[in-house]
Image 1 (spheres, rainbow, N blue to C red):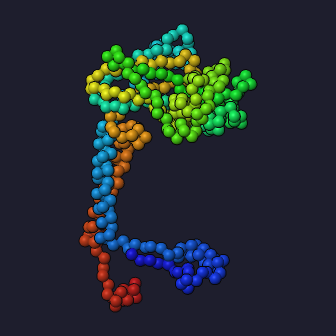
Image 2: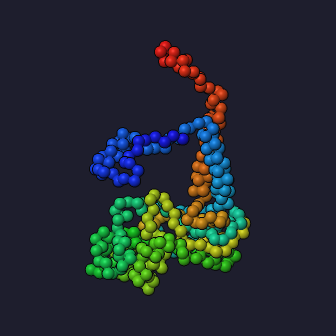
Length: 351
């Protein structure tokens, strides 16, 4: 391994006599790329060893990731068509806004494999642009933390005031809160869906006030989404906290809750879904995510993510092994010519 570059220090034990000149000298070295640098000599043995060790490391990591992807089971049910009467299929919003029709829907789900708790329940929306620039900025983070003490909420327009009174929480994001609800029954016994600790702890502790309560929320003539309990602080309304963390893509899923009971294979699960009649926004599918692996939900939320990581890791391992073979066989397939001192001089003159 070679170390190249000129020394920039003066005599040992003495400070630089002229800091400006020394600084200019260092700048010159930087622009001319002559700073002291470590330049490893890439010999075949060294390169082969690095690629071989890297491949050996990736093999068990890829195996673990692949095994995790195989242990994830998902049950998906799309209800934006199955729960709507035939005559309203072409105009779903009209059905949702029509109070004369019940908005309850029952779906039967079959469990394909044994599933060990915790089982995560997600809802998924398609073609919903939470990343729109007008939508993303229609909120007030300081109001979420301080409540009515903070009154500079112009960024929330037009959902900042109602009848001259401030709205807490303000903005279009909170106004469009997802409000579909789900219940699940197994053998006529309702399964408890735990909706606690579904939001990030950092959001609960540092972004939503513990003494901030909903005020004047969803009291206007046009109601966009779900309502909030005025007696519960925002830091405890985790469905709101999850919804307020906007998605980067138009198709996204958000955590609804967890089922803390195991489910057996070939078991029938009855899911009941309720639409709120005044919902003017959501036309979605609910995503029932069943995870039996021991991976934390924040690490891998679905099998697609794990499968992508597995492919990436296996691809890296294969690339390392391929490079190892190429470097190892190259000296025999295409050896370099070895010149002596006089042969090199003659070669340079003749060329």
